[in-house]
Length: 308
Ligand SMILES: Cc1cc2nc3c(=O)[nH]c(=O)nc-3n(C[C@H](O)[C@H](O)[C@H](O)COP(=O)(O)OP(=O)(O)OC[C@H]3O[C@@H](n4cnc5c(N)ncnc54)[C@H](O)[C@@H]3O)c2cc1C
Image 1 (tube, protein in one colour):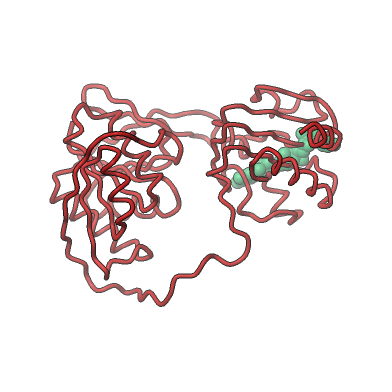
Image 2 (cartoon, protein in one colour):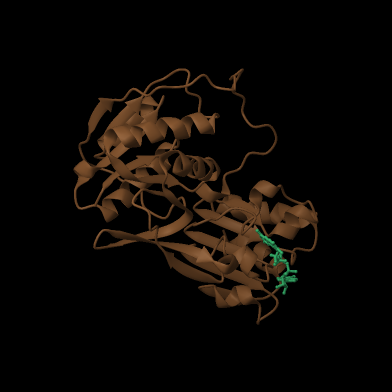
């Protein structure tokens, strides 16, 4: 197996990539983790057993994705890594395409799992709008693979090494003026362990109050189907699950009044336990669920809230 380089600017995702790399490599010496201006991540990765190569370059800013891709390309060349694993979040996917071009690699994003056979890496990805799973591999020697967050458990326990790596950073076309917290609602439903998702079965925006109460009692987040956000505008688009929204892998997903079109289910079907509450016994969502309650969601939510 050729050398593997891993990178994500998010520490939890970088730790997941370390597990992914370990799953396809027989030698941890072949795996190298690159960090950019992130001392906390250097520590976390080395404590999880990674050989860390830290790039500390004040003029390399994460927002300049082209510059980050160029730096990672140099790192891969320097460290002899032909396989580069990134996270398939928004930034990771953009870096993936650019980096593949920089190093002349084949590229796959939205990869859910990896398998190796005789050095060939097979990537599993949802295909046909999530209706099926495709096994795909990259024919080129150099490969950039972006892995869906939460596909692998974060690596832990081990003793790695910390090394410095210098890359040439070209003057950026971007100038960083200030870093601000994103205005408006900021929610990360992809990180939630419990999700309570509402669909068009919800009668009115006012009924969201009891749904929010249920999510709070369960220590989770409220999410929704696309029309609830884009047509009804009851919730922000940050909370949409599915093809054009977020891909979530919570431990528990309670799905209220969602019919279960494939564009929705592709974003939630990897949840550990799915409960569907729907008045329609034949709703597609029910066939994908571990538990089904055929009843009015409003009554069910009230009952759960008072029981909890
Ligand atoms: C290109 C494209 C991309 C798309 N991307 C997404 C996406 O990312 N995410 C997404 O969600 N959709 C997406 N869609 C839309 C998707 O196809 C569906 O239209 C949408 O998911 C349906 O939302 P819903 O299940 O909430 O509504 P509906 O399909 O209208 O279902 C409502 C459900 O509520 C049930 N119900 C009604 N009243 C009650 C009650 N009182 N109690 C309990 N149950 C009740 C009904 O039986 C029904 O099953 C996309 C579509 C396209 C074409």
